[in-house]
Image (cartoon, rainbow, N blue to C red):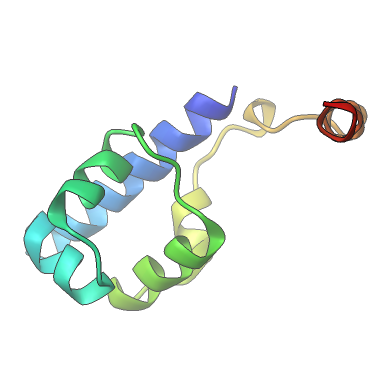
Length: 92
């Protein structure tokens, strides 16, 4: 499930970057990361933190919600699943 969200975010990132005519290098410089990191975000090899999403949204001149547009509702965990995940994280 998480992978589908990461893939969606990566696709949205790639589309917006290309739409603005930016290379991965351009975007990396503007965000303070190497182009390889942008590659990893776009391919969903690495997850984007909230801070990274915020920085990317600012540089790409979009609201941070842009990255989540079109995300399937069933890709989101239910509240009971989130509570269970929290319990497991606390126990381990």
